[in-house]
Every structure is written in structure tokens, then in C-alpha cells.
Length: 596
Image 1 (cartoon, rainbow, N blue to C red):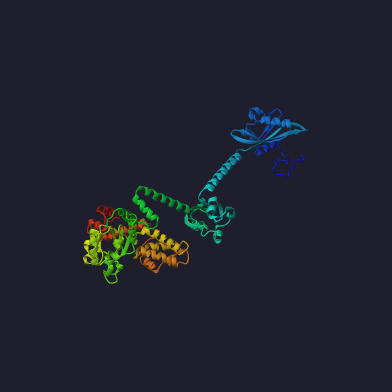
Image 2 (cartoon, rainbow, N blue to C red):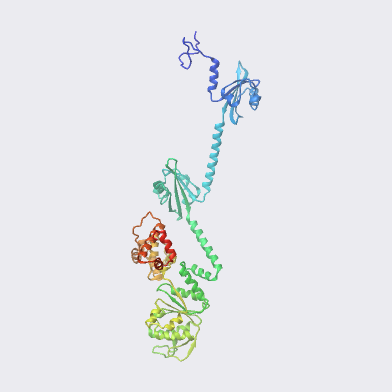
């Protein structure tokens, strides 16, 4: 009769040909024990192994009949405790063959009598490895968090859709955008709400390339942003990391370094000290090397009493250089009398320069009048526009330079005075000498030490500081806010040739301040003369390939010039002479461009 506990409806069992089930319960028990992923063993109260499955045998060397003290000695104490307390013990850690196992011990009862211990061993090696890796990852995450949060540069991280993932404290300080409030929101929302004026993240998402731009904060700070795309192994853009740097601090540091460099230069030589002092006082702005040399020469001339002839176009600041010489001369405590020779009628030049005696002419003062030379005694007399001095007066001036004695017009007495002469003109005196309009002997007396002031168009490095200085000066004068020039306006003002030199530049600055409606000066606000001259002078580069580098364009231009010159010259020597180079340089450049 069939066993009612074994049903034939379960196909798991094997059947014999006669329909009966052939089941070996011992083999079934072993199969059942080996089917579990854990090690299983049964120990007697005398610590002998009764049963062990395959995993227990292979991983822990627990074989039936073996005693615990020969297989897993540390487990004896735990089993003894179970036998005493008749309570299960969990999470007992066992080390065997380099692996870790968590043992669970349960007492086995039969008819209420404890007859043995069931031990279940779970392999914890993989779990421990994962746990260790998780600890390492957590440590790495903490380190990365520390690095990101301690960075002085702002870090702004978004995902591939522009959603903000992280904002470090430095970025929060710079942008006033808090991490708590904006993480999880899309960067497009910040732009839409005008919390930021423009986003480097959106440019990176659009171009999929590294992008740099300048961003202005609400506090007026200038931030230099660098957006870097991050791609996954499949080439998908999944992160945008933005580095933010406050260039306001960099500019301040640069200014401090420049000030220290100037201070060091002051200690090197007194002459440069005076020059820097004058520059810092904003009386003279000398950034161009040619103008710096003029300042140095002027200060050196201040130490002697030589006659100086200041040459230069109208409006270049010849009077300013004269003031500088007077300021640092031994005569600084005495007056400097300035005379514009072109503004005095010819009939009155001599009386103005040398004075007149009592009753010298109709309308003269009863007591007479001292001339400018007498008033300048012990000091300096500045004869501006000396080329306009009449020939008759030139003779008398020449005589004074030779003996230092003056005689008033209409008088008979002579008087010796101690006066240093500085003359200035914007005209070519040599050509005037050829035309008999100026005395050559007076020219050579005046031209002891010439100072030729360069026009403003040849002092390009001075232009921007000069413009900034006078814009600020007129803003203060007319009580307006400080003004800023756009880059296009700056380029136009620098490119303008200034035929009226510094005087014209000052007038342009005053006009811009007076006429400006706000604190930003654009190209369209510039005077028409500046715009027309700039547009007329804009170079047209024919055939310029925008993909070329500057060096490539320079090389092509050099090659074109060499080809053109060689067509008109028979020899390399002639070509070198025309181009102002030596022959070996010409030969090398011809070889470089395959023209030899």
C-alpha cells in the first residue's frame, strides 16, 4: 500500500516501472543539505561532528566524526555556552582558509532533551569585501567633499540636462546663490529669473566644448568662469563642472605687485623716484618708453642751468614738461614766468620782455614798468611759441643770453638778472632759418639741450591711463558717477590719431562726461570725428582665413613682402637694404619660405 505522505502528483519524485516510488531518504537528506548555499553541521554534546554538508566540508574542513578542537577550536566556547544556556547564539565570526563566516548555533531537542547543536555557517567574505569597498568609497567621498568645499575657487556642478547638482561654499560666497535653495533646479531657471546674467553651463551644453566667459555678480564683482564638459564612456555629456574665480582679487593683487615694483624702483635711483612721484601724482602719465625717456631727461636737466629748447606738435604738453623742470630745479622756490610770444603784438614784445623806462612812449606808466625778465630774476622764464618772436626782438634776446644784462625800452640803465631760459615751439626752426625768418645764432644759443616731445599718437601705452584719468577728473568736476568705456569705445579712442594731441584728448574726455546720459560710454557716444577717422582707418585684410593663427598670417604676409621686394631687386643685398635687414637674415627667410 502506498505511503499517504508521499503523493504521486508531484513530478519531482522518480517512479519505477510498476508505478511505485523509489525514494532513498538518506540520499534525499544529503541532497537537501547540499542544496543550501550555507555550510551546515550538527555537533554532539561531546563536540564531535555528526553531520556536515558539502560546503561545511570543503570550506571549513568539518567532516563527520571529527572533533571541534581539530577543526574549529574557537567554536567550542560558543557551543559550550549553548549547551549551558540552551539558547541560540547568532553572529559568531569564524575565520577559516582566509575566509570569514558568520555562524548561527541552535540547540537540538528530542523529547525535551538537548541532544546536539545545529550550526549554520554563512560565508561573509564577499559581504566584508563589499563593506570594505563601501567604507573606501565613503572615505573617498568625504575626501572629495572636503576638497571641493575647501576650494577657494567656486565649483558649480550640473548634470547633462542643466540641473544643478552641487554648489560649493566658495561659489555661494561669490554668487550669493545658496546650495540649499537652488540644488535640484535647472540652470535655465536662474537665467530666466535674472539671478545670473548669463550661464557658461548652457554654453557648454550647446557646444559640448570647454567655454570661458566673464560673469558679473549683483555685487559688481567680475567672475572668470570656465565650464568643462564631462562625458561617459559612451560619449554622452552627463556633467558640466564650472570653475569660478573672482578676478577682482587678482586685479587687486596685480595692482599691489605693481605698487611694490614701483617702490623698489624708487630705492634704486633718485631720478626714477622723482619720475614715479610725478606719475603717481597724476600730473604726468608716462607709460610709453619714449615718453619715459623724456621725463627722465627733463628731471636730469632740472639739476643744471642749461638753456632748453622744447620741441613738439601743438598740444603735446610742452608746458607740462617745463613745469616739471622748474619743480625739480634749484630755482623751484622762485617764480617761473610764462610768455606766449605769439600772443603779444610785435610793437609791444620788447617792452613786455624787457620793460620800459619812464616816458618811453605815449601811454607808458609814469614810473615805467619792469619786464618779464626782471620779474623772473632768480627763476625761470618760459618763452612759448619762440618762433613767433619778431627778428628785432630776437637780437635783443640773443644779447641777453650772452651777457645776462637787460635794458628797458627808452632807458639808458642796464641791469644784470639771473634768469634761466626755456623756449618751446611747434615749428621747424631750421626751415625758418633757411627762409630768414629766424636767426641761426639765436637758434644755436637756445638749442643747447633739445627736448622733442612725441605726439600722442606715438604714445599708445599712455592713452588708456590718460583717458581714464581725465574721465575721472571731469566726473568729479561735474559731480557725475564714475564712467566706464566699452571695449569698442576704448579701441576707437586708442586708434584715433589725435591731431590736436593731449589737448584734443582732454577736450574729448570732457565732452564725453558732459554729454553722457549714463555711466556707460559706448562707441556710438564718441564724437563723430573719432568715429569717422576710426572707420576710415580700419584695416581690410584681404583673403584672411579665419581659421589661421596669427603666426600663420604673419608668415604669409612676410612671404608676400619678400616676393614683392625680390621682383624689384636684383640681389639679396638690395632687398636687405630696402627692408632694413642684414643679408644673412634675408637669406634665412627666403629659405624658410622656399623662395631661395
